[in-house]
Image 1 (cartoon, helix red, strand yellow):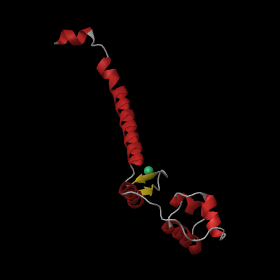
Image 2 (tube, rainbow, N blue to C red):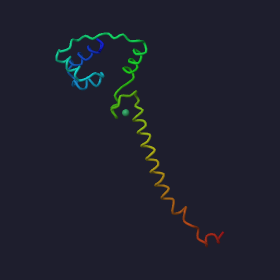
Image 3 (cartoon, rainbow, N blue to C red):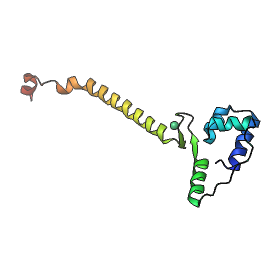
Image 4 (spheres, helix red, strand yellow):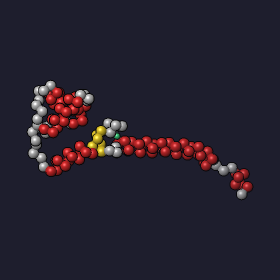
Length: 123
Ligand SMILES: [Zn+2]
């Protein structure tokens, strides 16, 4: 059962006319059918206030205030996005590894070349 506040928010967004129903549904975590029903007036703009315990309320608050859709990866995350941060980190690691192996390859011939006997004899 949706809360009155949620139903009213859906109604408000629908009336604002800025977002497609699908986006409203995704953003508020309700089905598109629900949004559509409210849009077509099949569902009254009222809800039932659920009986919730404090933990649930807090959890909800946590999500509504902290969770956002990351513009980069599209996941619903706490910003700054840890997923993008991890991806960037891995990308950097991959790059530096490539860089290192490139350097190692460039250095290898001088390092691994066996010393000429004449070199040794000169010492
Ligand atoms: Zn992200």
